[in-house]
Image 1 (cartoon, protein in one colour):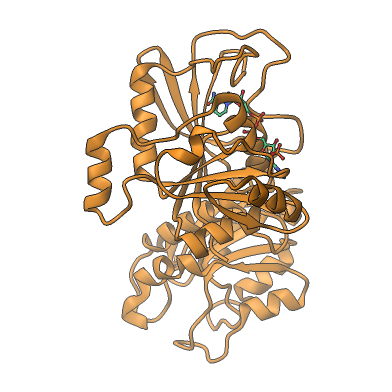
Image 2 (cartoon, helix red, strand yellow):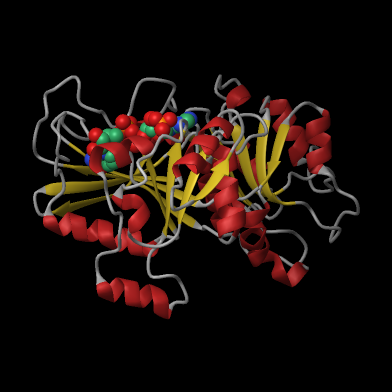
Length: 375
Ligand SMILES: NC(=O)c1ccc[n+]([C@@H]2O[C@H](COP(=O)([O-])OP(=O)(O)OC[C@H]3O[C@@H](n4cnc5c(N)ncnc54)[C@H](OP(=O)(O)O)[C@@H]3O)[C@@H](O)[C@H]2O)c1
């Protein structure tokens, strides 16, 4: 089920705190950065915060610029994004600013929390997600029922920590403020627990008055059949590689990337690369990795078209090469049509051998784009 693009947004002190322990909210951003946050809010369909942030800060979460609200309306959107909160207990103050400003509101909670939230008469739709809060179900619901394509998450720390640890964050927008908090009781941005092993991708740095904005993308593939946000980024790269293939009337244009479990790119390839008129994308990528590389069994192969099962030009089709390399996970955008081989089923062949194959059909159009003339 599709999810919205999830963007985590936060400001931290130099020693990594989100706030101090005083009664008032600690202002970490600069005025120009608050305006940037307003711009990001205006660009999304929904903004989410945790119940802890409602209790601590009593925020309004508005788009403050009249011009930005007018632009949203001109684009056929409501003036304010949907406001979303998450609470296990349902114990939320009905008088909080959150409920009485801006547009529509939704509370995601547990079955028990929903009873309490309804008892309190909160001015919001209350959605029970079962005995415990399931973040994937929450994101699916936001997308399917509220049409949310882009979700901005504005904290607090417990919310950011879970979304990042569960591989559900597409992007982190982090502002570093030049001050210290120095109080171990203050809330931190990210709590302890299991994060991805390797490095995130730094996609932007920007100085804004005396703060610095850093934008990162998580890189670690999902595990097994469960897709992670980073799977979409890598598959999109495979689709861009497909567009670089020398054109052909007799073969598909395909891109492939092999990524280690910690998010390190091991190799990439595309059809007919380096002057080889018959090389396939997965074949080209795998050929660049030593066959005894210990990262292969836990790696993921991303390929814009599912791996082939029949080949006239070479002894082994790509599905066989993937099995021989020991790779146990493949993410693809597009099942092979009958254009050249009838009934090709790379996905079936691989899953029959215990490989997890994840088909992310929301990238199918990108994968098909360089192959339109063949379809
Ligand atoms: N600097 C910044 O950019 C920034 C941004 C936002 C917030 N903050 C600061 O962050 C602090 C608040 O952070 P926080 O970590 O205490 O609170 P939080 O993350 O805003 O909210 C935590 C609450 O959300 C609910 N929740 C979260 N995950 C849940 C789950 N899996 N199941 C059920 N309920 C769940 C629970 O609500 P219930 O208790 O109702 O069950 C939990 O107490 C404040 O000091 C605030 O100023 C700073």
